[in-house]
Length: 220
Length: 220
DNA sequence: TCAATAGTGTCTCTTAGACAATATTGA
DNA sequence: TCAATATTGTCTAAGAGACACTATTGA
Image 1 (cartoon, protein in one colour):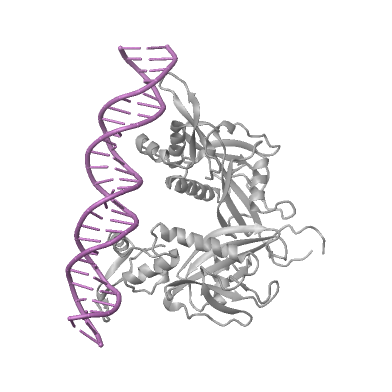
Image 2 (cartoon, rainbow over the protein chains, first blue to last red):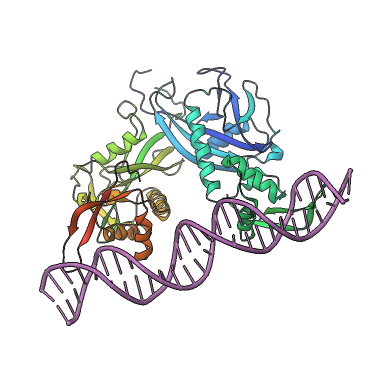
């Protein structure tokens, strides 16, 4: 046992897992079951364990496996934040990830022994978050908006088969603003990301809606 | 002394420092003065020291202070890479930064006691790099290109005062392709980032060229 | 005068925003 | 028929690519 300075900092992965419910962008929060910040709501996270994790993405997936019974459809790195004061345990580095969960998997939350979990609106948070997680969430939302604003299609937020209106609603939920139907569909007509499912429609008290799916090889 | 597994990984910052010389994008390499990979060329880097660095950006700045006698004009994070096999010392996390140095500061390289340094063309590398630094450099170049491709102006690569042709040459060096003069200048006419310096011109055996500078508050 | 580079204009094509019109179903 | 939503079209303005043109200097 020595008192040498802490040469290696705490490294963790934190995930902003998004989904869509009622045309509203949701993010998964967990209630921390142990100190520090026990009882506070926070983004799911895990401390990097070099003996177990192949890389930080594996750490992020491990952080979600405690909360979600299915694999996420999309996971990507957003940024790394670091500093002495962001965690009371000392100098820490957090790598923030953004993940997407299809809307039909939104119920796939497992009850952890220690942590509660809930979906909340990503734009107007109802609770204060632990540490600097509000800033982490903000950067994840910004990255997601940026990408969808550049016309990337967040198909991983939808079911395997979806209508163009559902896709438009998902984009609107991400962007926080309505989109023009005509222009939106005009862009999709020339998109390489989608394909029509021949003969499959959603019926209802109106004109049937064509079903689409992600084209093979699609990457958000 | 114990044989417990290595719970905290090696964390470092690596910097791709760019500048422009002869209308060509250059990146600074250092020759490693000690193991591992002693003698190999690599991106400048430093291991995070929580007792000294306020955050990873400070680590990046410290990594450059050994090589460069002036402050860099721009520093931003690109990505974080991690894994067990990228460094022979064990599991490591590297946060990659991209930095810009004005072309008139390109000589401001200090000779380190242990490491040699050189500028090389960023697009066609003349040497093999240590570890996974070729991939790190590639992501930094991609991030820079992406940004300039979205019409961000890399004014930090230029001197304080510059002509529009110099700016165009810098953008072309970053993008690796020529740009149309008319279209380029048309965009700049409505840009908030530039301002004309009244009455200042560069003379020569041709029509004088108006000098410009970055407008106050400009951010790349 | 000419070479050399600075700076502007012009055509066309594509894209995006706003909005209107038409289509097809179940009730 | 009608309400409700799907789907398409149209007008216009802004932006980008390609290219031609004019401007101003030193030699």
